[in-house]
Amino acid sequence: MEFPVRWLPALLHLLIMGAEVLCDCTVENMQIEGGTYKLTKQLQEGSRLIYSCPNGYYPDPAWTYLCQANGSWTPAPKTFPRQRCKVVECPDPNVLLYGSVSPPQQRYFVGNETMTECYSGYTMRGSLRRVCLPNGKWSGRTPICSRDTGDHCADPGIPAGASRTGNSFGIGDTVRYQCSRELFLMGSDERVCQENGQWTGIEPSCYYKHTYDTPEEVGQALGRKIRDHLKEMELIDDESEVRGQCGLHQPYETHLGNSNRNMYPWAASVIIVTKDSVTRTCSGSLVTPQFVLTAAQCFIDHQPENVGVHIDGRLHRVERMWIHPLYNVAARAAQGVSEFYDYDVALVQLTEQVVISTAVRPICIPCTQQTSDALRLNLTCAEQEEILLNQHFERLQFLTKTHRGMRPKEVWAKLHHNRAECISHVLKAGGITAMDPNVAVTENFLCTGGRIPFRDHIACPGDGGGAVFKNYESRTIQVALVSWGTKNLCSGGGLVESDDDSRDFHLNLFRVVPFLKSILGNVTQDEYEPLTFLDD
Ligand SMILES: *[C@@H]1O[C@H](CO)[C@@H](O)[C@H](O)[C@H]1NC(C)=O
Ligand SMILES: *[C@@H]1O[C@H](CO)[C@@H](O)[C@H](O)[C@H]1NC(C)=O
Ligand SMILES: *[C@@H]1O[C@H](CO)[C@@H](O)[C@H](O)[C@H]1NC(C)=O
Ligand SMILES: *[C@@H]1O[C@H](CO)[C@@H](O)[C@H](O)[C@H]1NC(C)=O
Image (tube, rainbow, N blue to C red):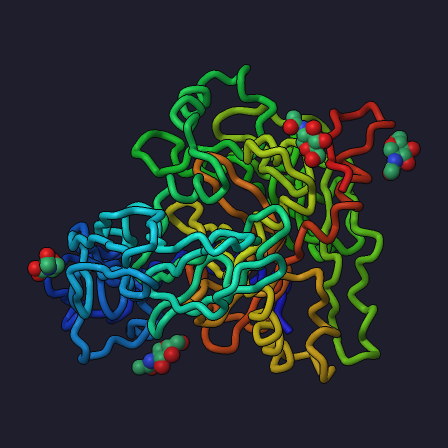
């Protein structure tokens, strides 16, 4: 079994050696028809070749390649199909019931327009005219032709590219959706008609691999527009207005000064000096001006004076470490799990508060009033979890340090019915002889990695303890922390992609709220300002 602390010597090695070793990657046969590419570090090991295409086109079959130490690109380039910029396609809109879409086409490409007409006796909801957009989605809303049948819920429609089973819409009736081949489903694949006349869940959409959400859509998915986004960005310069706001960050990289840091102002490194004077590093996240959240495995029997926290280039001294009381690596050794990482969470209390600025600011954490405020919704703890960890494939990120600053790793958490397959790969990890994956990977972990629906990034040495987060435009919410994985694929460090079997497990913060609350929400102490935790 591999886990972040053990990977650390490899990371230190990498940082000291740098990645300046020249390798033989070549750009021969790497051209893209109709587009261009750039290299992040010429042809050196760890360099990334990234394709770009004009608006309305996407690179196919690959978006990017990574230069390996042995001089080959990964994934292995193919000669067929040849690399080219393909026109963005939108999913098939001819799935409408009781109406027709014109013009009828086999395939619809960016810029193509459709009109919808309902059969006589049926009325239309949704958008009459739709255009295929450069992000691979149709403009407007799904058209629905229905007639008044006295059903309790309104016809929930069939989104482009999908098929539906279930055609009765009374209380308790269920409809199920599937996307056609090549497409994958975002949103709810199953919806139930409720007593209040509303369907549970959110309308599904079918995505190609080139389909993406614009930031505005992410905001709308939360039931609101990001109306105040610009105002908020102006406020970032007015510290007095935003001091108490968690997760506020600069959403895009600019060419100004501390831009990379301002995108991840909560990022922290926990430095631990061991008895034999070896320095190890874990990642962490600033959760209040005086506390950093990290993994329990970073600490063994360390004293606070042997621990420091780096935030934006400054080293902070540590008052105390709080380890989750149920954390016990040896707890399941007898059950065939040589190292058990349940409750791998710790809080590090700094001796003094950090100074909040555009580059140093806490991230939002689950079940706090501050997080509901960030989402601008009046939510319970359970509703926060429903919004943040809802999809069968939930898109999350965590950070890795590279020579060019911090970079987000993209992963899809496999939730609901995708989870069992994901955690089953733990049985192939070293140190595990248990037959049941749930013995090693409890319900408290999120599972990422593998290549479905896309190839995930995999955690590397030094990423452990860091925040697994979701960005909502200018706010960041931490949902988990990087804990351990089945394979170390990170000889080159940085943005390494998963293979079929590698999986990472991240401790779900919604499962450790009582621990977080007992310290961060403690109102009977007077050393620091407590966070406001929600009741349920
Ligand atoms: C180069 O290394 C990668 C990963 O270590 C490996 O998958 C690949 O087969 C190697 N290629 C050659 C040509 O040795
Ligand atoms: C649909 O888009 C494709 C690609 O841009 C274009 O060649 C075709 O003419 C369009 N069809 C219609 C009916 O506009
Ligand atoms: C928030 O929701 C709770 C429970 O649903 C309700 O009691 C409360 O009045 C709501 N607060 C606001 C400001 O809407
Ligand atoms: C809160 O802090 C006080 C004072 O340090 C301490 O006595 C108490 O046990 C703490 N409460 C919890 C729930 O840990």
